[in-house]
Each structure stands twice: as structure tokens, then as C-alpha cells.
Amino acid sequence: MNSILWIILFFLLLFIGRQRGVKTFFTFLLSMILIITYIILMALGFNAITLALIICVLASLISIFMLNGYSNKTKSAFIGVMVVLFIIFVLIYIIGKRAKIGGFGDEALETIGAFNFDINYNMTNVIIGMFLVSAIGTIIDTSISVATAMNEVLENNPKIKEKELYKSGMNVGADILSTTINTLYFALISTFIGFFMWHRTISIESLINYKVFTQNIILLLITFIASILIIPITSFISSRVLLNKKIYSFKKIKR
Image 1 (cartoon, rainbow, N blue to C red):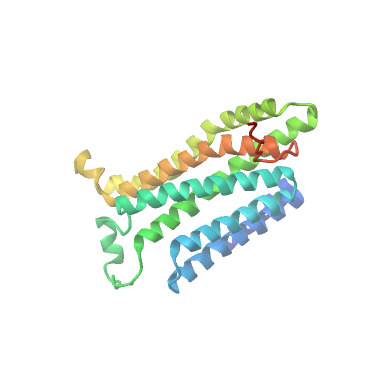
Image 2: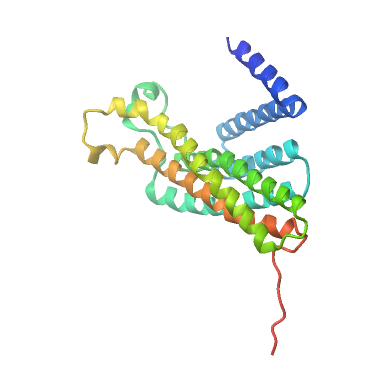
């Protein structure tokens, strides 16, 4: 049955996207291989956070440059993704360590009870790594959308000023932000349905203190923050790169 769904997916991408659709399909397979490799290397004892950062960088390279080619547009998007990745890494690391979000909730005991709990692995690092990998997809998507729109604006108006180009990126970002937030909300909140059914008889105060609930809420909020941050950062970087200006400029101080 799985094979049939894979075949349907491939031919739909081929029919709708043509050559780009086929490229999307194989890019998706590469991303799957990355995740499988990530899990295998964790099982071999490698640090989960370091692996997650490497996976995020590789996934960004594949999704941005393999699908869209190398240009100022994709270079801007990639730099923006790397900046936001660093910011949310610091944020997730601090929150993850302080909140002690590693491990499983009580509802998972029936599933994992037969396994050995002495795995000698830092589960907080696993959750932090999972948060990074979970957030990278929407960051890439928003970044390339903003950078592409700004590139189109520049092509239609080559004499546009940097400030106006930046503003156009912000306008595009504002237009897609509500859709992105709603999509992420429904995608992530659906994982709560089984949890709510399991704990439907307990009080709200007890519910919000469950580990699984806390993990998912933190993931949801981190992803929201990343989706918002990527818009001004990509807009700023694109407005500089597309106009062939340095991202950082240092002026001489007059004495």
C-alpha cells in the first residue's frame, strides 16, 4: 500500500511540477535519508545537538540550492536561514536545559515499558535536536518565499532603493505570516488530540504541567518565533545582497 502512495506522489509531482516536480521528489528522498542518518548516528552515540545542527545546514543546502539553483536570491535565503538557526539554537538550548524537557510522559510507559531505560544518552539533547530539525522546514520555506518575491520586485523595478526593497520583503512576509502560523498551529496541535483524550478527566492545572504538553507547547512557540524572525532578517539580507551591497559596512570615524 505504501508503494502505491509513493507512485501516486511521484506522478503527481511529475504531472504538476514537470522537471521541478521530479527534482522536488528526489530532494524529499534526500531529506529522508538525512533524518535516517541522524537517527543512526545518535544510536551510535554521537551528540544529538551537534548532529541536529549539521542536519539543519545540509537540509538548507539541499532545499534551497538544489531546488532553486545558486543565485543572489538563494544565497540571501540561505544566509537568513543560518542566522535564524543560530538564534533559535541559543533560545532552545537555554530553555531546554532550564525546563528539563527531556524524556517521556506517563502515557508513554505502556509503549516503552518493556524496553531498557538505561540507554546512557542525554534525552534533553535529543529533544533540543528534535526542536531544531522540526523548525528548519518552515524557516527555509518562508525565507525562500521572501527572497524570491524581493528578486521579482527588483527585476521589475531595477532602480528601486534599498529601503523600498526591504519594505517589499516585509510586506510579502506579513502576507504569508498568518498562513504560516495557522498551518504550523494545526499541524502541531493535532499531536495533542490523543494526549487530551488520554487525560480528559484531570484538571487544567495538572495538564499544563505534563512533560509532553510542555514539550509540544515549547516547540510550537519556538517555531512561531522562528517563522517571524526569518522575515525581517531575510528582507534585510536580500535587500543588501540583491543590490550587490555588503551586508556589513564599516564607516571611518571622523575625528
